[in-house]
Length: 396
Image (cartoon, rainbow, N blue to C red; front, side, top):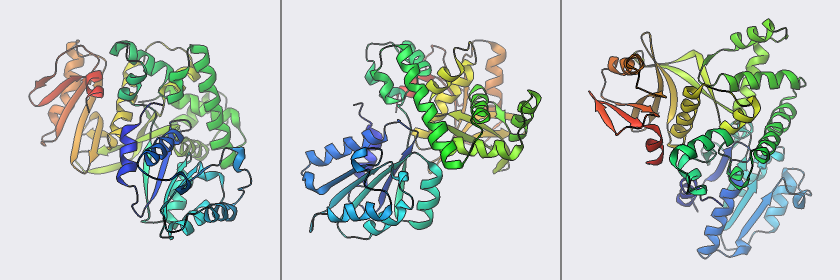
């Protein structure tokens, strides 16, 4: 198992805190493995195995748990008196009204609860409503570039990056030996997301259209998109769909963590804009194997990699707008913000000027950064840092 140390450290910090720990993320991004690693940490630090209650609701061993009452009864019957009980419920969204059982267990004095789920709408809406102020959400992504490197220590950074954007960064991919094996694995996850996480839960019947919108979004990562444009593209190709249906499908993709949406932010007006968002995929392996081998678009692929890395580092990430200029990312956290441009290369003079100009227009004192694939030492051009993107990803 690849150690997911940053997520693991978060669980350790919140151990025994009177909060429900909710781990969310794409199917097979490592949520169950993370809980296993944390369980091992508990056992290694003096917690008796009888104090740990582990339930994986995708395991037939627990098929007798069919509703929130049977979930609560099973756990309650196995609690150890006068000791802290560590309760792990994997893929909790399988149980309708699961939050009722979780809420009742939470109010006990001797429980510490950890749950995972693959559907953002279920977790954010139901938990936020019924468990307001009682939980923290740990948003898990596939492997970072640093984590990926631990699986392939003998590859150069360039070789590793090519593998990273082709095979993707879902943890189990690192155990597969051939491209065909990876393709089969990725395809099964894609179908699970489309059928189980979206069509079944959203009562969508048009699988063909849903997949067409998914392919369109994957093919246009990093491009400004709107529901109107997507609907018009489908209609022009002879498909019938309305804007509201496109919106529903896009919402479903983000709720299942298949896609992430980056909205626009007006830097000078200091306001969030309602139109012109971009979408990025949670795993580039999904894009590579669903679209097939496509030459080019390396700039947007690099944008996708940087976007996910910024999320991992705890930023809220937006597309920046300053007058008529666009800035690839405005990354904001409690400490401030960073303005980031992402480009394959700065060797061309026109490209260099184009990437520098939006950052030069900004007159505040926040960090300004250009990330490039060029092999070059860290440099500073009038306060704008220029850095090789792989070095940036490997330095935390």
